[in-house]
Length: 350
Image 1 (cartoon, one colour):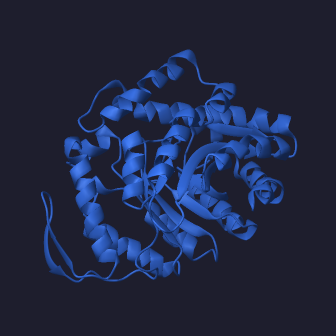
Image 2 (image 1 turned 90 degrees about the vertical axis):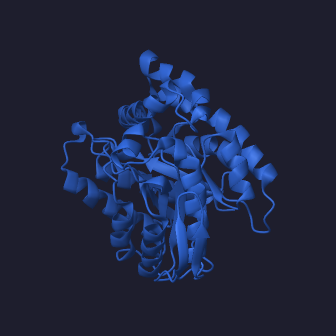
Image 3 (image 1 turned 90 degrees about the horizontal axis):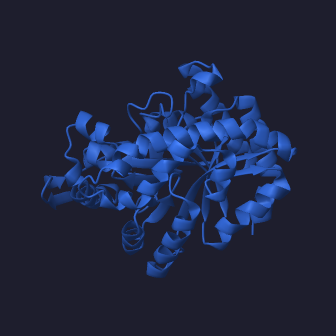
């Protein structure tokens, strides 16, 4: 199981750092992670989520990271295709793959924010067809083929899309997966599946089994699970520090998903299965609850190794770690990165 990093580029008021410093800290942490042997740094794309996520242009951040690192792979997790023209996505993805010398991982998804859909002038009910058509166009464009496509939303004739990515036929493709049907579709489409962070582990575990059962490609299946993680030699101190940070992070995350959980938006009906978890906000989130639902792992190296085994046993190949969840001082995050690399990752190297 590979250890990756996951960033929202959060800007919580209680951390008392500038927005600029949040970006500076993120870059410094990824540079350190590159030196420590982490596998990939994943950045989300979110809009209009002050405090929780200031990662509105993750490809630009990863372009900067690409010039400061040597080995760590760079992940877009995920690009919401309905908000973008697929040819623009293809051009920017290929450029980033060139700048990183072939280290890009491309995650795609539909997005889930009604506010984002409204702001960008996209009908949320069209999200599935837009995503399907955009993915087909992306695969053509990134593979160096002349793009020809006739669909409901896009009509493209004999287009030469440049530049071309370093990786062939294209960078590894992933999709955000929430509903059970999406996991099966991802396997059939030979896409890696990115799960979490707002779906409890007991549900994700069942989804992963469906995905692995449906996987028919000759290459190994790729599955990612996002969790809040914080590890220090002193497990008690780790819990004292991480508890408030992780609770803040998941409160913010669940708040952003509430509009979809509360209403059955067209083509987002599967979110209703998660609707009961809105009660977490009303009952009060705490670290113990997050750990019980498999959404966070905190403690000493031995404790973390023990708790993380269940993800590997269930078939997770990439653990996307929100170390400190963007709500702890970077010195503490970097101390945890050292601890994870030195005392946790070796237990999962084989």
